[in-house]
Structure formats: structure tokens, C-alpha cells
Length: 138
Image (cartoon, rainbow, N blue to C red):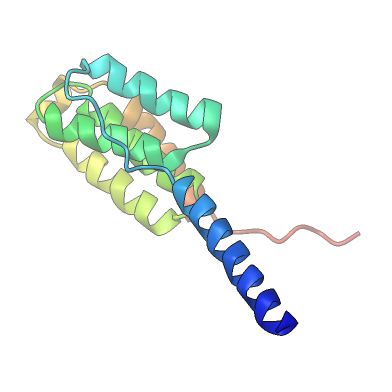
């Protein structure tokens, strides 16, 4: 009888804990469609700087690209997405995305694109490609 009661209490405690944790799960991010282009960047940067939340930042940059496909700041959003992959250690994906961005600087549109994403993309690709040197043993 005591064993059954203890099992029942344990089961109730487990279920309570499960429900508590499940209720704390965050809902999927719903991005307000009324944001202006600058607000997408501001919210993405706030997510990274204030909360180290790269996932949310990616969602804002991707939403920006979907909602404003012809905006001149598209190159900046693409750079930021690639940079997040770089910062989170996904170097292969980062390099791929930086190279896709750099292709845009070979076409006619390059004359109107901001230069900084091109310059920084090249520098980060150089870092990714640089030979890794093991630290010296002392």
C-alpha cells in the first residue's frame, strides 16, 4: 500500500513538473508585418546584443529579405545572416552565404549596393580559409 502511494505521488510530481516546464516553453516568434525596414535590423541586433539570441535575429533578417526583397539593405541583411552562422561556428554555411553575397557585387547592381558587406565578407572568408595554427606548448 505504501509502495503504491509512493508511486502515485512520484507520478503526480513528475506530471506536475512536466506540465510546468511545458507551459514555460516559448511560443514561435510572430513578427509584426507593420515593421519598417530599420525596425527589422534594430530588433535583430537587440536580440543578439541583449539576449545572445541568434535564432531570433536570423528570423528577423530572413523576414526582412522576404518582405523587402528589393530593398537596398538586402545586402546588409544577407551579410548579417552569414555573420551569425560564422559567430555560431557553422563556418561552411557562413562561407557559402558570404560567397553568394559576393556574387551580387559582380553584377550591375554592385554600383548601388553598400560596400561594407563586400569588404567584411572578404575578410571573414580569409579568416575561415586561413590555416589553423596550433598554440605553442610552453
